[in-house]
Amino acid sequence: MSEQLKQHRDQIDAIDEQILKLVNERAALARKIGGLKDDGVIYRPEREAQILRRMQANNAGPLSNEAVSHIFRSVMANCRALEKELSIAFLGPLGTYSEEAALKQFGLGRQAVVCGSIDEVFRTIEASAADYGVVPVENSTEGAIGLTLDLLLASPLQICGEIMLPIHHCLLSKQTDITQISHVFSHSQSLAQCHEWLNNKLPRVVREPVTSNAFAAKMIHDLVSSDGTFAAAIASKRAAELFNLNVLAENIEDDANNTTRFLVLGKQQVAPSGKDKTSLVLATQNKPGAMVDLLAPLAKNGVSMTKFESRPSKLGLWDYVFYVDIEGHTNDEKVAEALNQIKAKAAFVKVLGVYPIAVM
Image 1 (cartoon, rainbow, N blue to C red):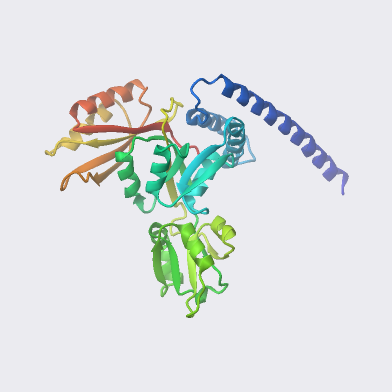
Image 2 (image 1 turned 90 degrees about the vertical axis):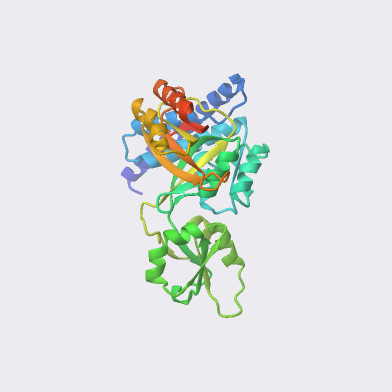
């Protein structure tokens, strides 16, 4: 070993000792703060978002902002776990993108509550069988998840946060020869997100939608082929590791920027973080210009709308409700005034949640 290499490694060892000491000092302070809280709330999305934004703003590299966020999310998760190991519900089985989103937001300092459906995630939190839940709400390629929107309308739960997860699909199989694949299983949205890749690479395969990507991977793992059928799943690389499958192709999504937005669901109100989002669901009178008139207070008060989605209300034929995301917190004066004006005009208004804008 060269003397220069030894010097660098000695410096790293010394820095590691400092990091260990400082992380434990931070954990001790976090534990003291936990003892001073009088509301029993352990997860503070607004505080964590503020920390991540500050660390990214002060990041001089060479680590990327995403890497810095990953490190500090892990630190915060482990500090949180000193107070309580939070239980997080998500659509299973293990290996779904919902689990990846839960890992990104809550780290390893949490207990997994694996659910068989998005409906079950909602019911689990409502019954206090989990502290929080993570559900998909929209994809940059395929649009909104209608079931999640419908459940938000009926549920008493609050949106406490959002997670933006880049989605990178892999083709997984027990086989090693991609030309032998005759069937591909995955969630319908994932099949759609890989539509052109499948057309180009596997034009003759039968595409079979199932309840989740990870379920597809598990199916392939458990499948015993007796008729010459060779199957594959579209799922994550983590699913390949969990179910001991070969990765025949990586990054097969048609859009390299393919991203799914997930929501964190809970029962708490979230304080302002300084960069927030408010999600609403609205209904208006069925008359010409009613929707334009209803949204006019946003422009009048300088409030930016970032999402507008219509869904059948299921209360009457051709009746619709409208899901709207706006920038700002309900504590902000201009947001509060805009909402007061909207409520005066709307047939129905429900605030689904106020929460920090996702930090990548």
